[in-house]
Image (cartoon, rainbow, N blue to C red; front, side, top):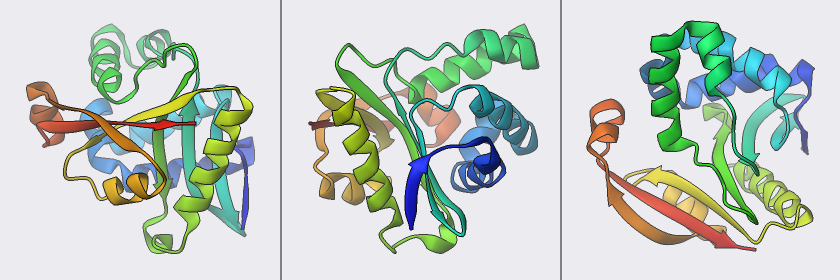
Length: 186
């Protein structure tokens, strides 16, 4: 297996995996998973920084480490209009936090459902952590629902709970009221 930076030729498989893993969230944010796929393809074609894939003959996992503020509102406004763009932006801001100086934000790690529990996500995360260290980041953060299957995976990689919070808007749109902010010091 090879872990490497995202390339244009990976976009179809990477976005397919992302849509498989986060279909409910993408449908909530962008109203339609096919529209979400198209937007993600276009977005990641121009924004590959911090994106990594795991490849075994084809892409089987996709992860994104954000190391600077994401400027996505203009993109969304241009692609889906002011009202829908603003709505999508506000919902995305819940999951995608602007990292503070010296920090990185783990937006997602998505492993193809048929390839899970084979160490692929762990290898991808180790590469992301290594890259974060190479960028002189001091810590990584991420947000997940309290009941997420990712919690044991992330704690095994050294992430610790920093904060537990409730969010009624997130409950309304994403079916989970309680969320965990996790941090890993590098």
